[in-house]
Image (cartoon, rainbow, N blue to C red):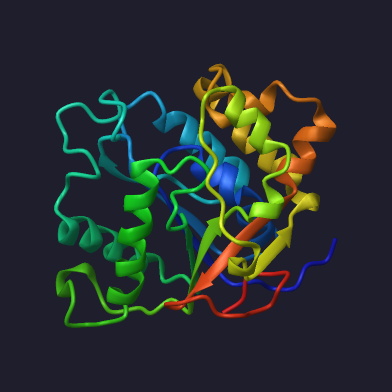
Amino acid sequence: MEIAMLPSLLAVFAHPDDESLLAGGVLAQHHAAGARTAVVTATWASESRRAPELAAALAVLGAGSPRLLGYNDARNPEAAPGRPRLVDAPLDEVVGRLVAHIRDFRPDIVVGHDALGQLTGHPDHVRTHQITLLAVEAAGLAHLHPDAGPPWQPAAFYAATHPESGVGLLRPLLEGVGKSILAVPDSYVTTSVDVTPWADTKWAAILAHRGEVARERPLPGVLARLPEADRTRIIQTEHFTRLTPGPTKGDPGQLTT
């Protein structure tokens, strides 16, 4: 399949597996088109059990090596023992560290969590969204975080999200394992990307997070127990809200600068 050149992407997510679940399709799509892609993960240390799984997933997606900020998970102290939780870390410190990655990678577009913290409102997701919003703006301003490298202004921040009409099969599945469902109004979604051609790659990246696939409650494990047709229906479309800094209409079928 011949694909037009697409913008470079830097994805910023809270945990290993968020990148594959929420933006694995567009990461694979942009990589296949020859665009540069990379992922920053806010929690879990490089020596943790999930770091090798993240590296394997990024290799599948063509997104380079892990860029781990190494903060502790709000709910799992084994993520980075002895280190502060992301939700407790000084805001300016974390923003500055993310600014350094943005200025180093120089992406056209940044992709990350939405303000709700995705479907379940995990506090790390919410905090990562807040940090990313601040860092995307700060990265372009030379007077902010001057030690983080020369300024670079991404064209847009796209927040991965779930519209109320698109929750579909996920609602009973997640409620069945005791999780809540948070979704945005359909009007808040500016971009829905059909990633069907890259669904197999996305699923292979999700499977690389073996520890989560083996567990009952995490979404990778929930998806792994589904019939293939149902699973494909869930993962074949990725929804986003373009924030620059508020919802802005762009191409309705593709991430653009």
